[in-house]
Amino acid sequence: MGRKHSILVAAICLVLGVGSAAADILSDGTDTRRADLAPPKGPSAAPCSVLWFTNPFGSNDAARLSGLGLFITVTTNPADLNAVNLANYDVLAIAYTGAGVIGAAQPVIQAYVASGHGLLIHQPSVEGSIDYAPAAFGVNILSLWWCGVSGGTGPFGAIIVNGAHPITTGLTDADLSGDFDEAGPIGPGYTVLAVNASCGTPSLAAGTTLNGRVAFETGNASLGAADPGSNLYWSQLFSWLCTPQATPAQRPTWGRVKMLYR
Image (cartoon, rainbow, N blue to C red; front, side, top):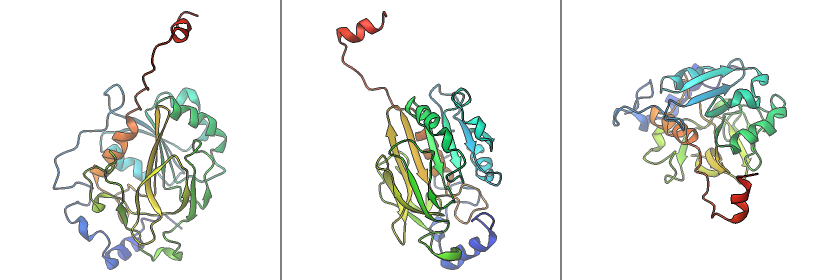
């Protein structure tokens, strides 16, 4: 079938007028209305490091995002999703991956996120419920296209419904990437930030769990995509994912003090 950012889809985008509001966003994702972006940083103020797990055809997104200053390592090997290897990265991104591929790694992924890391579930592009998300962050994909339109001839524009979140603050709808999967119910751990403009299905959502952060989106960052989103959008998404949750302050008690000396 090929990726959904084919030349045919791009032509449909132009015919439908999708993206016309993005006149100030250049083909390389640069928004001429804004200053140059600082690269997303990890907890140590070093450039954010990302392990990008994908199928063999899903590395074009990673190549574009590396240009934002992210340190991205691409892998297609499920064996790389082990606790020792994941500890080397600030964020795990799982792209174009449905159920039955890395489900056995779900407990490791959940522990990785809970320990203060970020997880991005990036356009699964496979129908059904994924089996690798942390508890409360499940995702169900109803269609590989959008709004259930067979063949990809329907609208795939996304609009912001929550502009107060750090990912969407200061963005316009034109900054968003397209909605290239029709997502069904998603887990209660998420707050929906953007939806398909026509049918209201979630296209961007985010949430926190213990010290970690999880985001789900149905976009496509490749500059060959019909609607790849602006650099600012992707930079803010990863800046949020790369920053761990602050550990909640706990009132000292004698029991906690004793634990330090056992």
